[in-house]
Image (tube, rainbow, N blue to C red; front, side):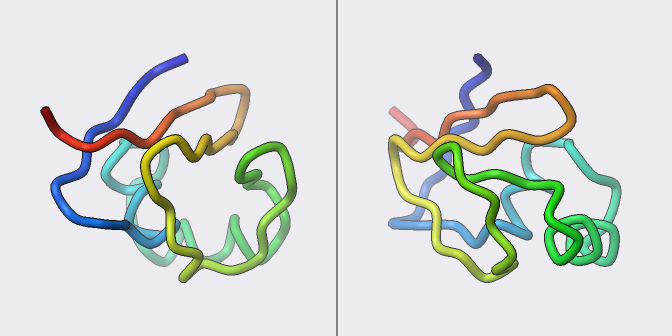
Length: 71
């Protein structure tokens, strides 16, 4: 499992997918989230504005990425 660090209290799912280099653009992220391809903490998430905080896990296309606060 990969870890991606954030410097804010939370990050929106759409932005996180871009930060983790799982998608190329916000438009791509929007479509993939709406079509049910992204899971947050093991459950399909259709909300691109879902707030992710430390400890949350995003699953997409076989990759699992965990959110953590920057040290």
